[in-house]
Length: 430
Image 1: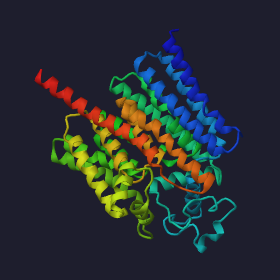
Image 2: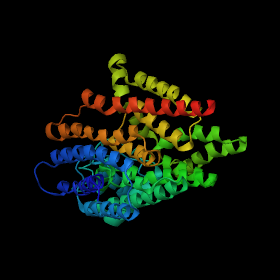
Image 3: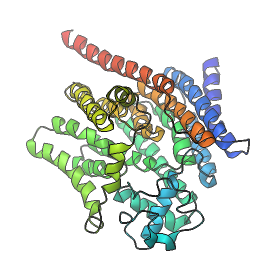
Image 4: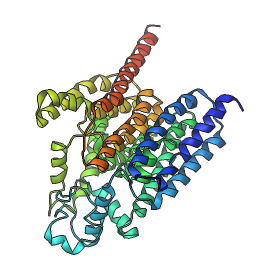
């Protein structure tokens, strides 16, 4: 075995077993959480460098993936450390189990006092707000509550199944595009999904296989089916809306253009029929999108000058649209366009929670771009905000953290976009 292969195997083992301290009582959980996540993210960057350069046998790839699944299973009964979002999922599932529209009442509403327990809504954040989550998410919450009640394991089990489906669809897409299967390890060994899904049980893990199903079926020319899955992904997080202009411009016939942009909204909108006549499912979501901000470097820098939340959001939206135009009208391949569009959304968004970057991660598996790999690793630095909040009660963005997180990403993204455009121009001239 060569020294490079030994280093690769050693780093792979570290990326798998390095999560185990999160299960041990070694002191303050959030301190261990930050140390483990940031440390493993540095190892992840080194691992990708060797992975990209070396040849990996398929049996080793599948053994490493199996080991990462085992690690995720081990976390099934552990309590979340970096987030309490799962308790909102439980609450929404509990209200539906009681036959109540989850969009109708705030958790602190007196009409729901009979649902209160020692856990719910006590452990929830934003108890004075109605739910922001869309119907497909609500149905998953209901299944989770029916399986485990006020326990996290069912939500984690559903997320584990979603992650396995994510890996399967990535396997199929890589095969379709004749890309080496070793790049499945970009997702499987990444600390980000293990910590954000297997440990903290974030919802976005449900959306990843939906977006990948869209890509897979679109590549196989099953466009209506692909459009349905794209619309379903909106109900987990509306990241895929940025893909609609790509589809519109790719299709040749006007009827096909219209189908590809309307079918996703139909698949998304039809989910609201059980709720829309008795409540406003968008009420809390609109409040969230108007007011929340976290870990957005561009937004924070602009807002430090403008000092107006709403105006700054408009400027970020305008900058996003302007930056998307060259992506949409470029000659890049389909997957690259999606990748650049999603990356730009993250760069200009006012809110970029670390689990949001999982939408970038699944695209990095196919595109193998350093900008995304670095982003997936560097977002671990946001754990310092959570660390300060849990230890000192102060929720604060750190400018230095955001500079380290975003500046290399933006520089790499510009380089990757310009390089590919230059290569296409040279090939045309030659």
